[in-house]
Image 1: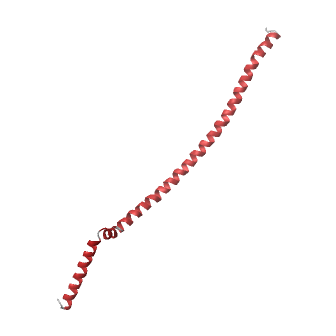
Image 2: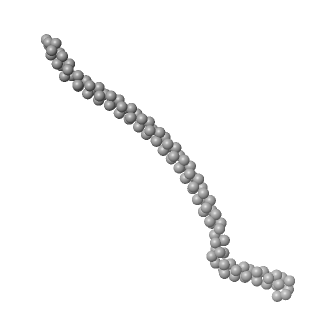
Image 3: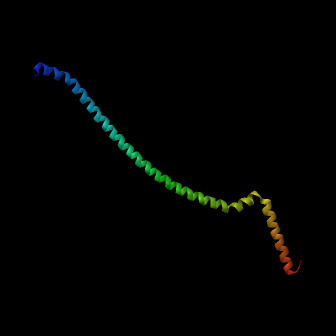
Length: 112
């Protein structure tokens, strides 16, 4: 059996180990608390990211519809752009139309 002196010696030599273990345990508890907070922040970020993706999908749909409308408008303005780009062709064409209309009118009434 162990004597009281031996028991005291063992107790005294184990006491610093107990304090170290308690210190490690307390440190682990603090770290686990931080990990929990970080985990919550990550979950919030993932939720926000998901909402942002949904919003971006809605914006993309709106943008696509706007692109379609712009393309349709550009097709409608093609004739206008042609007149602005080539005004001589438009003036010559309009002149030919009016001259032919006058000639046709005069031939109908018997002058030509």
